[in-house]
Amino acid sequence: MAKRLLPLLNRVLVEKITPPSKTSSGILLPERTAKLNSGKVVAVGPGCRDVEGKLIPVSVKEGDTVLLPEYGGTEVKLSEKEYHLYRDDDILGTLHE
Image (cartoon, rainbow, N blue to C red; front, top):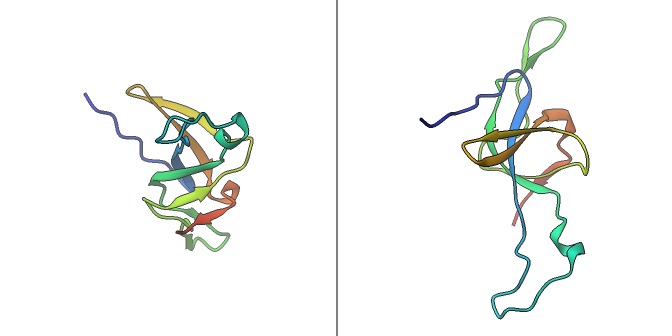
């Protein structure tokens, strides 16, 4: 049975991107390069409401690559995969190629 987590309010579900530990030719990369705080957005909540009741949408969408803070977020495990749940305000920016 596959589970799907739909975040509430302004929460964003992110799957962290783990960079390769060695190159295609077999050269091992140092540990410092393995610590990249980026991830791919898997699901987003609808947003939160302001004082007047108007909906403020989340600033990222599914499929975006985002820059994450070093600490924070809530770790979630779904069917042997690790995800992290962040607030929209905690995400530092989006990465574009």
